[in-house]
Length: 523
Image (cartoon, rainbow, N blue to C red; front, side, top):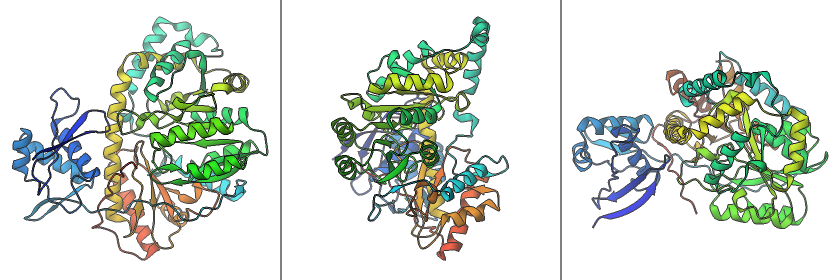
């Protein structure tokens, strides 16, 4: 009997997973000649999805190459190329005179232990460590395997953006001869409102404020809804640059437990809201940094209901939302915002043009306050850059570009986890991102990743230790890695060297046979 399951992969095309042989399940896909992917890439993606979903389990032998070629009506070379790609990603391994097998399981990061919620000020020691890591990340001679700033020119449509910019200057040379004034490019705000429908948000151009990247959007939101001395709820772990941001505004932080697979603990949040312990909340429900997890649809609806019920603003950081691997995209919490208590913040720095630094916010009941703060802070965004981005969004090329990015990052994450499994100590755990390009690694034993950071820095390799992502000492054994760089010999060697030092510090052997983790199922 043939069992057919409908599924979706990161770029949105459908995969048909068929159990053709009960004793040896095989994943097949209808390969589309018109696709922008080559056949071997489509084939590799279909088997990768079957591995992630558990259809092909660790240790199982893959179907014979000729059998796969016949069932998919492709050449033997196509299958061999697909197998090579899966090997490169660390998903399968060849065994001499036996065939190809699914690699074993690198344990996923599990829920952390007891988490005491304490109000904390970002101390000078923590801020100094952030400055030290950030300085190293910006050093041009260092190999960076942690910075969440894509540095591969192939990841961005630079040539097309340059053509659009040049065309705009030819047609409208006065763009650079006049000031951009609030509220900024109407055309761009209209395009943003149109695209926001993908995240379930019904917005008008007048409800959108353009900002200088996502960080300014977060800063403006905090200034609009808090006063110095107030306490702000944060996920734990959370994006480390929120700590100096809070310190600059005279705000305190209260860290809320965050599950590595399911996101922010809503039970803990509800208790804090009932006790009126926080004045605002910053969270990344779509794709969280640094964990890479995402909240379920039910939890997003519950989160929206909580902040609307208790009248505590949620500052929703959606920076990675368009890089979710699942399709269709999971809606933002803002989509369920009944009375305007959710302030949605994001930017195009991770997807289109980092140097443009164009972001935006939809602030609901706080729109007017944020618009005024934006005007007195930085007036407006560049008209030339805004019109360039608007034309790119209107041209229809953005969706194709996003599909390419999602596929690239999903493959990069697989490959990076394969390297972690091979070179890091046995017992190492890693999260399984639902989008974006960062993931979280926890080391066994008493390894302090700040010591790893110092050791690697001597070899001009930069990582970000887990101590940055919390005001507590809870994550001293963890680090964040990033997969937005060219996967060349330098990058691979840097991860290998990080693993070797981790093995030295832990006294444990490398986990060569562990393999890679399976993508977690949504509960």
